[in-house]
Amino acid sequence: MSDAILTHPPIGEAQTWPDLPIGTTLDVIKVGFDGSIKARYPGTLVDAGAPAPWVAVECHWTLPSGESGGLHLVTGDTLIEFYSPEHPYNAFRIHAPDGTLRGWYANVTYPTVVEGTTLAWHDLWLDLIVLADGSFTVEDHDELEEAGIAESDPALHAAIVSACDELVRLATDRAFPFDHR
Image (tube, rainbow, N blue to C red; front, side):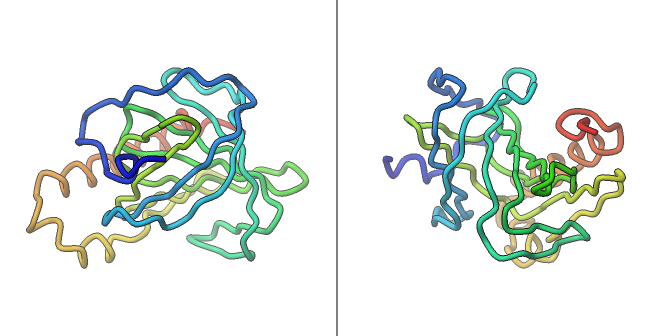
């Protein structure tokens, strides 16, 4: 992995990904706004019916159980994580160990970067949590405001809010990636 993968791509610039076959094991990295690694975990490229240019990566929740916005994550849950080289967000579909749909956790991001078998996504504060019944909440407005981006980079702030609005529209319409029932 090069240091370049920890640097976010320009807003609105699609990334070029290598052609990876289904079954490829990926090193998934969550990168903070400052370029620091916030989480790192393995995933497997799967066919989950994602439309182009999206890819689906199957991961397993190994951290302690927790809850956010009414969405419970339990050790052993399966996450189907959807990433795009073009879109400024991702979405994780979460299933209980018995296969029951728990809901989705979506992140506003820069477009996802893939280098070799490393996939990196850069978190941009706002998250959309969608429960299995279709209800949803937007999280972390306070963190976005505390970051001071509205003043220091108004264009980035507007892009973050716009991406979150797009996620809300998709969830409301039950469109991909929130269309699985």
